[in-house]
Image (cartoon, rainbow, N blue to C red):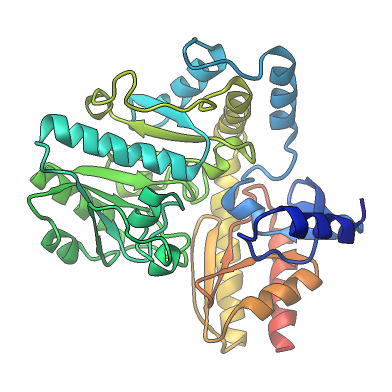
Length: 396
């Protein structure tokens, strides 16, 4: 199908909830995607930190294809081997004892919010239901998760919001402690703020949050939807802090492009849920679990994390050099292969011109270029991306 036909069908039949760029992507392999006209692009968006193993990774494709022949879906009223194996993999490689499977990051965060409230109701008292979240955070687009999100632009037009959320500045332990009230049951945050502009907190910040939670008997909830599954160079970003949360949420890269989410918790907290408290028809279906198992095993066994750290450090260095050449870059930062450039100008034109030269990137917050490429990229891929960025900025 020709590109214009695809765009016309989308514009006619799909609700207008995305500002789409005028290309129609039809296939991908590794760090490259191809449009309907046969043009290739170096993909440093990766589905927004989703395809951590790159597009059409052979081990994930093989696993999904094999599972599709055997069993695609049954109700969670029954046991399935794929779900059992993935849950065991996740608990073995994290702080958690129990897992709840769903289909997206927003669903995972909804589950975390419900579990926190249920735990508090049973163990701390029914008056404790409030969560403190961070300004400039992002936790999803359902009613509860946009309320948890500390950005008014995502909440506009959807008021009244749900009760039970307070917001404090990120990376500010004093403000966090000052916001605690007799109604507070937990603190919810991203280890690195993604949609907020790849904001990396001070080294000891998560440790301060854990200490505050312990002292006030609060739950610590980490949203690793964007940072998890190797994005920062460790399987989970909380590992850098040396502390363990009570609840963690995952999605995005968990299935390397297959829709899946998960909410993990310690056994003590997870016991607050009982049959009927929460559910998901498609959560943990065998097909999704096949994708997750293949993704996790590949990341854990194939030096993906090592490549993320090494190539991420190289990319950060190249961006710092780029900053010296272009005054419009005001800051460069990154952790693993989650990087950003802050700009003194709007970034939309740079995104468009990079696309025209064969590089896909995106802009968050208007003036922040975000780079979340597949974790399998090479230094040569980085060199090509930086060359295009340099050329585009030179021509502004």
